[in-house]
Image (cartoon, rainbow, N blue to C red; front, side, top):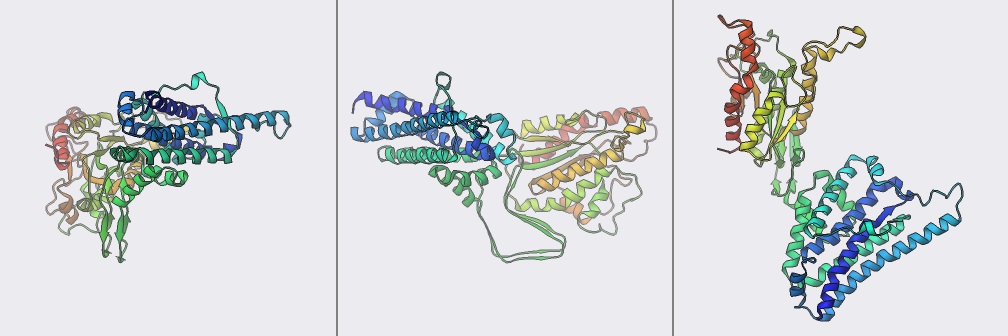
Length: 512
């Protein structure tokens, strides 16, 4: 085999890769621009993945591998890449012919047929799912071009457009088909190449969220066998086989996996259940949870809320329902406590999803609770913070009734926080491992006999406050402590309890 033949293979590969960068889409693609752009990007990635699997831009290594082939085999690989190049050249030529005809026959109805769409503007109009998928594929593509040291040659070439959908489909199908032939060629001499490409495809899938994984296979129409197999392997790993389900009462059963935001989710085993019976008001989850969750609030927590989580509390438990507790407190028991029991049956990784509710009057964001997140992240890397979006106000900023905003008053502000917390908790409740709240503003902080649910979740729920902090604890200033001192104590509660809370949560997460 001649060295010149071997060197021509990476050259043709780079030419084909750069052709993808030259293609634009015309006005006829406006109705489904995102779908077509995604298909084109996926075909680009298909070619790049093959190039990475054979290490095509590493000339010395490539020559060593190709030396094991017969010259006609290498020529066949060269011919396949040449065919891909010819497909692009034919598409570019057809594009030029269409543009000339459209210009010659220009009229009020056809003069915009050759208009080229702006990718940024069109993707902005696409669905959230398509935008997410497009961004994910672009990131994968850039990863390959950097790994292969591909330098774009688009700035030295004239960009051209595809104007008809049938031409795009033909180009994508033909190019993908030729890449698939290339994939079948080299493994005869380099068996590990198939394993490398399979792993590369799995790595791609691991970066995609659940919605994108559901969207892409239908768009790609089996044009990329390695990607399709990688998606199916993930689906098989997380398969659920649940039969004979019986629900007696107002119980809720979620069947399927739960995903925390921005959470990679490769892995997970299949689950098979012969029969399932849910009674009473039980809430259960059958599946895996990718991304553990912690709830951290700087608003008071209440033992009262636990009464409603699973029916009446123990008759001997005393709870003063007349105590004026902020509405925010009710969420801890009702939407977290009653469901924490199910975390025993859920598989968790050691990544924490941390919801922080800043204190009243603090600026938007995590507020002082960022100290807790920083401490936890040092113990549990890759943890994800989420700041609760609510007013966090006590008094209105203006007395002008024409612009009156009820949310600026304290009782209404926590109500909005409660609604926001409900949304976050109900979306991710099956991922919860623990709930942490700062303070317990009940008139009876120590219950003589804990409610059943409090006992059941006691190892996963903890509240912290200093006894003399009347804002969070008793609502009564401790004898001998004036209001100013109580306020000073209140302002440093987070700093006071950060280390203790961090140790408690990290312990539940399995960290030392």
